[in-house]
View 1 (tube, rainbow, N blue to C red):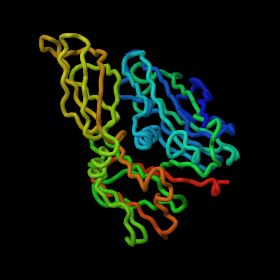
View 2: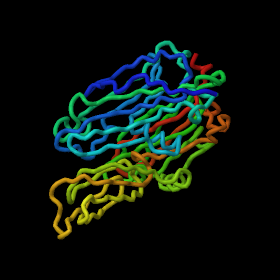
View 3: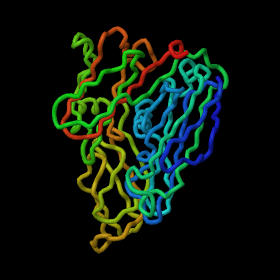
View 4: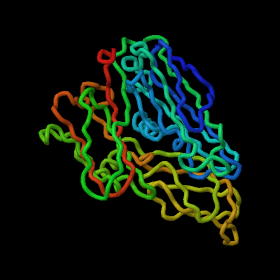
Length: 371
């Protein structure tokens, strides 16, 4: 086989608020699309404000047909589960500094899959859509992102030679969202069309572990005749760490003493913050649920009251407060969960606290059905 990377657009400008539409006309087999996002911080700082906050939706559509529809957070979390590695992420917080984050949208079982990939010739008007809201966390300006600095580079990972006739592709979509309550079950009617390869749930509230918001998942088929999934999220997290190990990120903070620092790794994080002066004394406390309080002193024991640039590493689980459940063996599509053999499929989420909850489904969609 032969492969090539096609740089379709380099640092294409994005609107502060709006949707960028990019026509995709290539006839080449696309194994994956890599999106590299950039932004520039305001002159003072840009703390705990990530590009994955302001890139609010990524879509691949053919008219009204959604082939992929995810937030950037969801897409990055799926990349970790589908590749075993975190995307490239260099947020940075200092005034005037640049931020860069990537995400890989993979259409096969693995990169360069010769049987499952995106064949855009099967569709009439394929378009990539990127929706942005630069003010999603903090208003643009001195302590946010600078206006008119959001950009994207679009790379296509193309199979040049050796691809078999495409059998299908992995469709990745947010299928349901709601605000969880403090008790009771939320029921989600699940799609009945294509086999399930994976299910991901995001349940985010500041300062809360995902399992403190949604405690349990259950997939109920035909009123309990078959239950392929019934597990507490905390147990799913433990099993996932065995499969993938902890996720890891490194970048620079711009902080002073007693500030709350947020980061993308929700469950059981371990952090290291390093001083750049020989006399720096740094510690953290209340380190859990994707955030911690920084304690930062000088060599005399006085609290540091002006921000400094500090190297930072975090290891943990549940990126962006998500949990993922695979169905079957990744390399063996017949082992995936087939919904067509049932009359009804109900996803039941047990609620514990108020949080923003989203359900993402990965399905193997054959091209015969999409033609």
